[in-house]
Image (tube, rainbow, N blue to C red; front, side):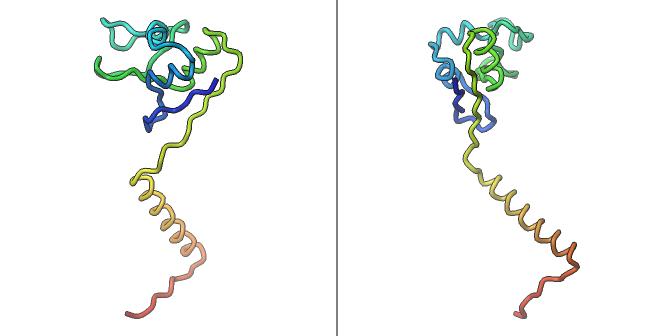
Length: 122
C-alpha cells in the first residue's frame, strides 16, 4: 500500500488521499475516523483512524501518513505497508531560502580562507 500525498504542502493526507491509499470508500473512511460531531479533537484511539488536530469543526479532516500506515497495518491487517511522502513543488520562499543559504556558504568559505573577494572598479 502506498499513501500518495495530496496537494497539501505539510505532508498530511486529505480524505480523498486516504481513500485512495486504503482502497476504501469515502463512507468507510468516515466510519474508521476517530471523530464525533460533539467533540472536536478526541483522544487517541488505537482502534480508529485518528485525524490531526483541528481548531475549527469546519476544518477538513487531515491524516498523517504514519497514522494511515499504522491503521492499515494494525487494524485492516494489510500486510505490506509503505508510507511515501513526496516532496512538494518548490515555493518562492524555498527558492529564496536556498539563495540565502548559497550566499552564506560563499561568505563562510571566504571567512575561513581569509580571502577577500576581488571587485572590479566601476
